[in-house]
Length: 274
Length: 273
Image 1: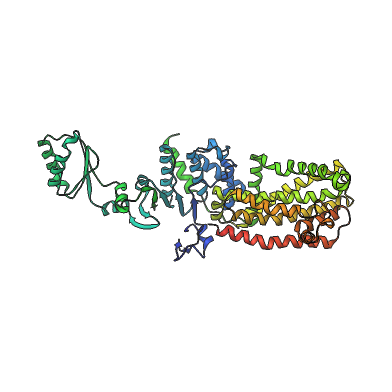
Image 2: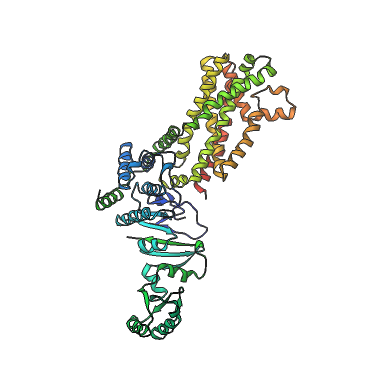
């Protein structure tokens, strides 16, 4: 809708001060869009696609070729420049798609689930591209199902659940909104778990959640009490195999915010802003 | 190449995308036309419809109906060729809608729509290349016809006028298919609807037989059928008996298609969900 592809049902919105309904071409000249499915001509080669888009952006023939070559090298697609896009791998396609979106550096780039279905290496590569874009002064609005991605990339995160905005803020704000630091402890012997639960609950004065047969977690309001808790566990000969103290993960934030809904129905909307 | 260098290169490429002035309608139209040409280069099979298809059609109908309808194939060819030419090209125009429908489903349509261009150029560019394709189909048919014994009495100029009429009409008719291409959700349903329109339109016309033999109610339809209007003009001009009234009628019919379906296509193109 903000990309001027859809008309709003109601209300109004402005992108860089231009109304999205009445000033579509002013908005279009500032933004760029990358959909979930590569919006490229699959029958054309990578280079032909980039030259075409550059020409449509107003570059002259010569400049368009130069710009296409520059982008192909930067996105490490120069080897595949003469291959038809339909023969590209998922990661190459996605990079190609982003390259096509930034032929003219946009002020605002929409990325719709840019890493869905990519292998970890390609994902990290796409993340690098997003960071470079932000460094270059582009506002990136990206949607993702992966909370780690939002945590890694976003300055501001908006959580959308079933079409409604349910939370917004920085990653740290969202984490803080659902509680303080969380202590995770894993035990060697599962029979110790219930005794450990009692000790930890009394020392840290909060309710423990059993996460599986060997481990539990608890929100810590007074981190200074943790050493004391651990020495008490040692006195009771309860052995820990691992422990960690940290902020809640965005996954926990997400599940807390959305209650018990299935994760498929959710979408995290996050925004990276210079 | 070190990682550092690559990052710098990436950053440079991202930051250096200066914004040129928006392209002129002519320039974006030509870009879209060259895209269509590149597609032909990469997928040459899509030229079957303008090469093999006309040959098969001409041979098939000439020898299938020639003896039965006119007594001899050479004699029938004089009547049939102009009509079958009109019919073949009219049927090929259908693929314009299919191409557009594919663009929509594959996502590139959304990219085009967010570009700062004069939007109709996306369609006009493709249609211009289609006109070249229709010319190729027409030339192949006329060439083969000449070999088989087609003798146009209107000479080269008469045939040229007929050809221009066919091309202009086809360009106009294409807007009907682009409209449908934007409305139909799948290529299969689009194909089906297009066929449902094309078959009666091309067969219930004066392409194959003189409409005098038809029942009165059907004659009425044949007379107003745009394909008959075009086939009449093309046949007459090829055989040297054409009138300017016929040309005017073809131009009027074509204009009606453009006036209705071009704005409708662009409205749907802009507002497609």
